[in-house]
Amino acid sequence: MSADEFDVTSLDLSHPIAGIDDIRAVNPHRFEFEMISAVVLIDRGRHLVVGYKDFGPNEFWARGHMPGYPLLPGVLMVEAAAQLCCYYTVTQLVSAPGSLMGLGGIEDTKFHRPVRPGDRLVLVGCGLKVHRRLTRFRVIGYVGAEKAFETTVVGVPIGKREELTGA
Image 1 (cartoon, rainbow, N blue to C red):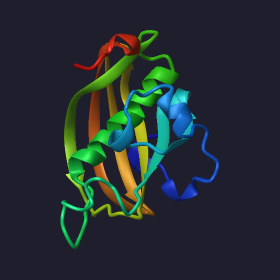
Image 2: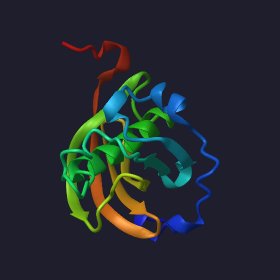
Image 3: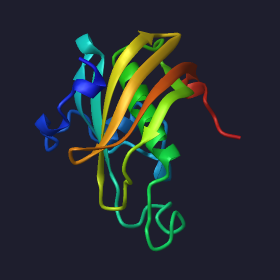
Image 4: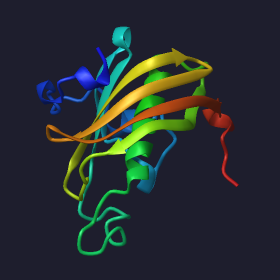
């Protein structure tokens, strides 16, 4: 099954398998850059992962992008996709123990509809190549049943979480 074939309307989003605290235990992103609210499905056999981000009225980007008609920047949609894939690679032991996968590239990205404050962006990711040295996931984002964007996220190892320190 590919990300394109997944029926997003069949999901029960009310019973996540991982909430924000579970995600924080894996992904290092915090504050404005926490782009995943919950994970609702992992199917290791199909390398399938589904999660979502709920956007509230006071998102950091809402005031300036674009005043009067706030739109989630496309680069943040891609960042959400990358964070979902990072969560999958760590929890499913694809990356080396204790290591994180970082964004190594994006391919074939298209934006189909705006994502606005108040929307829930549901992300469906399917691994095309899943290896500890390189991952490639096809990710499609939806608002309701409408496709908002699609991309292929390339992940590369960036080191062990405890070794990643700020400047």
